[in-house]
Image 1 (cartoon, rainbow, N blue to C red):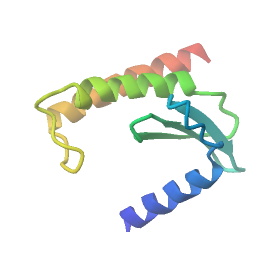
Image 2: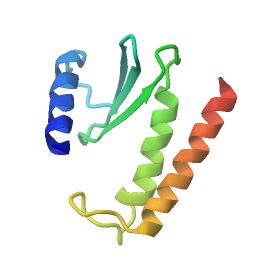
Image 3: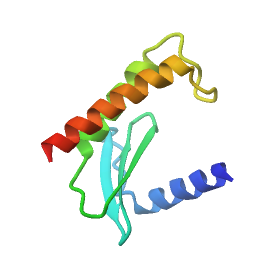
Image 4: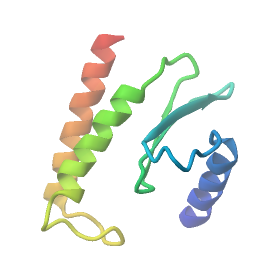
Length: 112
């Protein structure tokens, strides 16, 4: 059930995504808003997608998502003992990522 939801969300995002520029392989940030939420999307050149749902009145959070991406990269991509993408992360790796994300969120709230 969860896989189907994520697959549908990915298809929806692909339809809303700005036109791809084959010469520009850089990370993309965009957002869209409904009456109930605002969805912030950051997609890396490697195809990793970061989603953040906020209240509709939230400002642009591209910088916060960039920091989330950096935290994920440090905890998983650059960690040789981290599990592969299909495996569940260890509790220590997950706790480290959670602590970094919470710190980023607190700093983003202070800056608003």
